[in-house]
Length: 154
Image 1 (cartoon, rainbow, N blue to C red):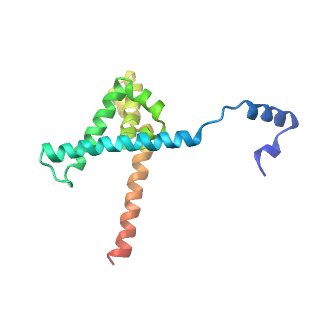
Image 2: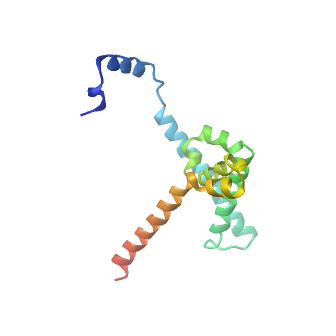
C-alpha cells in the first residue's frame, strides 16, 4: 500500500495542490554540472600530483599521499574562509564526491562547534558528518580485501 492511498480526501486534495506548485529540479543539468565540476576538481588534483612528481622528485606511487593532503588542506582553508560553501552550492554533488567534500564536511563541523571548546566542541563533533564515511570506507576496504584473499590467495 502506498502512502497516498492512506490519505484522507482533504489530504489528497492538498497533495495535488502542493505537487502542482512544487518547483521542478533540473536533474539532468545538475548531473551534468556535478560530472563536470567533479572532473575539474579531480583534474586539479592530478595537476597537483604531477607537480609533486616533477618538482619534488616523487614517484607516481609516492605522490598520492601528499596530493590528497594538499587537497584536504586547500578544501579546509576554503571552508574556513567561507569560499567552499559557495562553491559547493554552485557545484552540487561535484564538490561533495571528491576528497575535498570530505574535508569540507569535517572542517564545517569543527567550525560550527568551536564555541563549545576544543575537546567537547571541535573534537567530539568533527566526525559527526564524516564519521559514517570513515566507518563505511574502512568496512568496505575490509570486505574487498577479504574477498580478494579468499578468491585469489587460497
